[in-house]
Image (cartoon, rainbow over the protein chains, first blue to last red):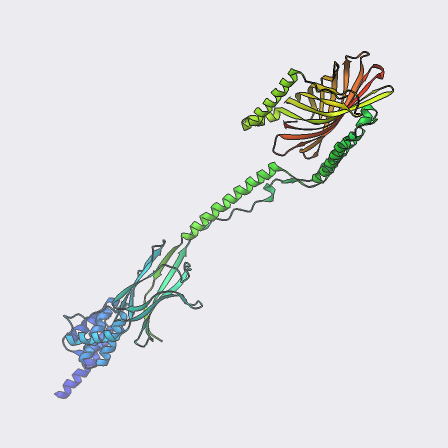
Length: 352
Length: 228
């Protein structure tokens, strides 16, 4: 009789996994939970593990994984597998640091163990909005961090694949229950981040300061800027009027001055026969002659054309005004940078 | 013998006063009015070192002195009316003999057929005043003046020749001919209506049969306002 009962149990144990393999994770979870409530801990453990192991379309939804693990941990506890239960509870907390066992479902010893595991687990979860738009100076990416227990963390924005990697340190210090960290889309130098993939990395430190766990949330940053206006084309020389006329009239100036000087000298001869004319006229002759020589030298130089100079100054001023307008507009457009930050699924891993 | 100072006519004094008042009014006038007037009107004055040589067959004497003069000119397009008045005392260079006052007035109607050429004609009065008598010359003269810029438009030289179409003198025998010329340099100060001028002028007036030939030379400096 006893032998046949043992055989029946063995058949049942072998039969349950085969049956479980044919069912979805949700069904297996329900059956596992029922078995646990019926104190059939071995069957419950098998079914719950099978539920958690389902993949693809049969996989447990993320919302149910915590419950499945919690029942599995409790089952292991009652199967006297305390270490296994502790490990499972730790896994729950890594997945969801805010997880709390239902006091109405689980007995106090389970809650007590879970609380002990929480106290010894240093991990952080993050609630990141799926999309954040940073368009103005007041806009921020707001990330709520949840901790399993009080410990030290460092939250940074890093850019994988770049030298140094770190873009901005958002927070360094202790975290108790939860904490909000903000990112304005700029690096530590104040420059707007480039388009590309970034990571929000939260490192949890143990009592010795060693990094025990790292949470990474991928961030996809898209930067959009208004197109700047093109610079006005450089002023074409063909638009400019000549500002100087080639030096001309030098011979005429010299001739005018010298002729006047000569006329001054010979005028008495022409008018009155030239006898005893005043020598004071030589001063006038010298003045006109010197004026002619000066005029010759001055006239050889290019002569400024005031009207053209004024017209060119107007043109240059107009071009400069256009340039200043474009420059001011471009400065304004560069300030109008818009960032769209999309977050991905968080990944948590043990520290190095 | 030294020439006694002569009192010029009251009309001359009145004319000088009028010119001075006009110059002051222009200088004090509103800027647009002043600019418009400066384009049309020119007033100037200065001093000249004058030298008069009177030669008769077998004898010659020279007098010299400083004369003061004023000029005025009003332009309308290519036409202009210009006048000049001067007076001063001449004393014999030899230190002996009688000095005389020189009073001269001229009124010309001018036309510019070309920008550099001016033709003018008009009466020219000249008086040599000695104690007890006055020798008066009246010329109806024609003038041709050529101008040339030597330093831009800032410095302009001119050569002017004139001849008397008719000459009269209140001296027995009467006048035969008169002619003269002037060379000068005018500086127009940039962006200013002020101008300055340095001239040398000479003219010759002869009594009939060259009984006496009077040659008057001037080296004059003048300044003025407006379009010279």
